[in-house]
Length: 208
Image (cartoon, rainbow, N blue to C red; front, side):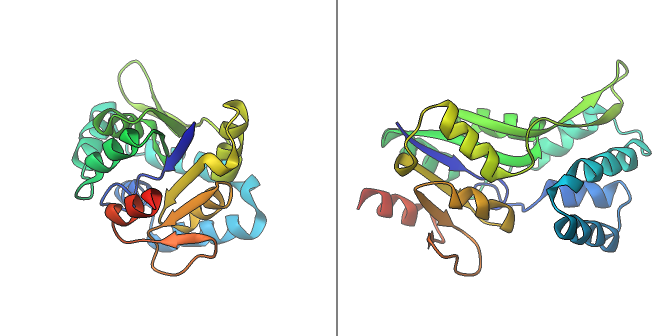
């Protein structure tokens, strides 16, 4: 079966990262965030669980409720023009559509339902106590899209040449390396991918 892995934020959705927006709301400065990311890149992905723990602690200080996150993610449900039709067109062409996003599970689930995607992969889940206050952020899977996609391909016994990927940021590059054909919405050229600007361009390439 032909399977296409779709990044959400920046690719199908208008916004780039809800993490950055939420970190500003809950007290991280841009400098703090940048310095920690730089450290994480330098020391490797093994630092990622520490980053998630730090974010959880920072967010909990504001005692946000589940209702806040639901409203916030409802507000962020803004897609690029033609995104839903694009997913529908992919399915008409025989593709299994799989959303792959670092966004919290609440947003990914909402997006999957709206787009009528066939499947989705969740990396992060928010947990709440009985009163609805945030308890923390749960890391649900390996924090690397390459590992996740490779595992998905293996478990579903897919042929690499029948897999496709769409992304727009540096966190998507390793995902695009693991599929047979990649499409890139980023600003610069990425070796081995088709640089595109519209969903229509992707469909034309797939149809050629």
